[in-house]
Image 1 (cartoon, rainbow, N blue to C red):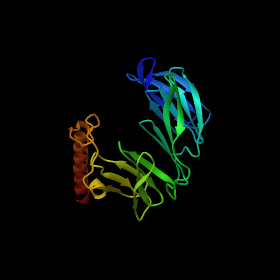
Image 2: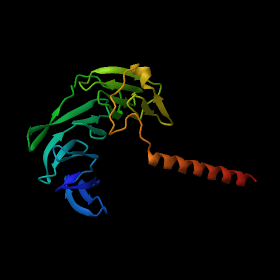
Image 3: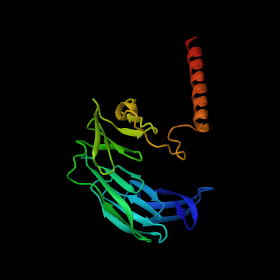
Image 4: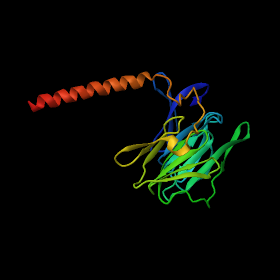
Length: 239
C-alpha cells in the first residue's frame, strides 16, 4: 500500500491490528488496532487510498490519508472473500454471494454499494473459491459445481462434477480453468466451454504466457535436481 507518499507492506493480526512495514528492511513503521476481533483478510484499494479490513460479520474501510477506519458495513459471512477491480466478493457457507462495489461519493469520500440480489440462487453449499477475468468470473462450491457468471450476476455456464470443488483459477487469456479437488488438480480447457472466444491480451499481466519466467525455470531446475537426488538415494538404499 501507499502511506505518506511511500509504498509499504501491510499485514494484519488475529488480534484485529494492521501493521505497516518498510519495503527495504521490513521494519515496522506503524501499528493500529481496528477492532478486537480476528481479521479474516485485507485488501488494498489505491484509488480511495484504503485498506479494506474483513471481519467475520462486517468489513471496514480504513482510510490511509486519515489513518482511521471511516466506514463499517455488516455482512452475512466474512469467512471467504476476494477483491477484484472495484468489487468486493463474499462467498458464504450457505451458498450465497454478497458483492459490494466501492465508488466515490466525493473525491475524498468513498462508499460501498451492495450489487447482489438476494433472490438469485448461487450455490447449494458453501462457496469455496472465486476467480476473475475481465469479462466474467467463476465460483466453485462444495455442491460439486463450477459456475461462470457475468458481472451483472447472470449465469453463463453451470458445470457439474462428481465431487466437491475447493479452489479454482483462470489460468490464461485462453480461459483455461484450474480446479482443485481434495486430491488432485484438474484443467478444463477454455475452448471446450467458449469455443474460439478468448480474452484480450494484457501485456502487463502476460495472460498468454509469452514472457520467459526466470523464477519458474529456476524452480524446474531445482525440482529436477531434487528428484535426481531422491532417485539416487532410493537406488543406494536398495543396494
